[in-house]
Image 1: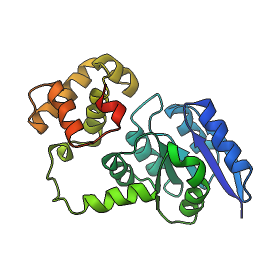
Image 2: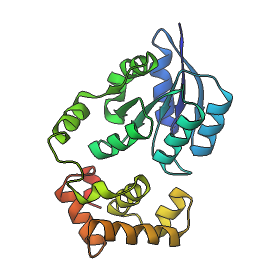
Image 3: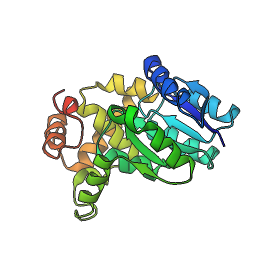
Length: 217
């Protein structure tokens, strides 16, 4: 049986690369592509497929929110998250939101076919490096750290603040007002018991929550 795959990524070169990998392997067919949240929803609603390869950082809305809606509307569709974010905490939230697999873009070329085949067959997929991070996290008490108190949306805002994005930039990316983002920021500071944004950044760096470029922003 041919596995029909949908690709959702806002970078044309990434989509082209994924399409090339799948097209040159037997048993896979790229049935459609999308470049943002709105077109991804439209594509999923109109095009039957077995697997959606989904970037969580596309324009339009929070990737985790999009993932939840996709699973609500198309529960049979298997979603393989393909992202630049290699953080264990982000991967854990993706799986809780309905992902069947989690793959970072740096490993996509070597693992993509294996990952797509695994999730299409009903299994779950996570890279070896990410599996090791998950295993290490099991030794930590639940809710031991302040960032684990955050909701998915709060965690997304937290990540973007630590990346150096402004309140207005975050609002535009998540399609909400700057006032709403300011409210989220206030909640984050309160829940994590931090005095200001700089303390959030130091916290993220100290606990190695995000990629190196985030911490250096």
